[in-house]
Image (cartoon, rainbow, N blue to C red; front, side, top):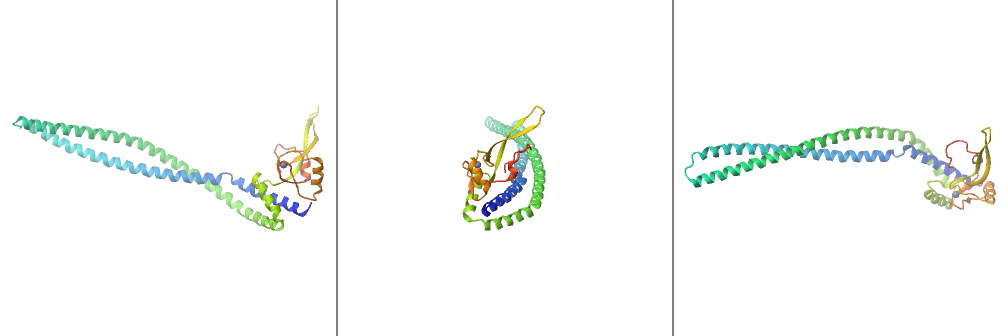
Length: 266
Ligand SMILES: [Zn+2]
């Protein structure tokens, strides 16, 4: 195999390892981020609700003392009714009494409405606080998981990166550019081995016989023409898949029947 191809194969192997590390972390970094955001907005909601709770309490207190004052005044006016001497005075006093009664009524109604709001608010707050506790616990667990993965993988990641840089320095720029372009478009997979595909036949005894079918691209699984297979096997130049454009190479391991259930893409 020519040096450039050999190096490209090695580069792909390192990138696969780096990808595996990333997938080990999975969606943990995003999960942690989302949890942090949820908790922050929940805290704001709790604070707002608590502020409203205080506001309502003060307003109820104010209304209650207003009612008490009005009731004192009402009793006084009602006593005065027995003492009036003219119709005009009587009418004026009755009007005052009606106004006071209306005021007391509307204050009592306002208290009722506020109390209902307060009841709902208490339920919401309880829910908020439960969710907050739940999410905080979840964050703690996920953050610890992420930290653990980071500690485990940081060294490995750094080592792989050093080896990657060393490789890159040895590969001609035009191949690096091609590699990057394909990798970006094809899920990080730019260099793949060709593979022998087999047909599985089970005989009467239950033995599986593997019958070689055709050779295909290890990336897109499209058939590679025989003359191209010969070229790839020789390893004398850089050959690409006519279908997906990936760089192809020959690896003995991929010429064996795949007897495991796992899909081997590489
Ligand atoms: Zn292909």
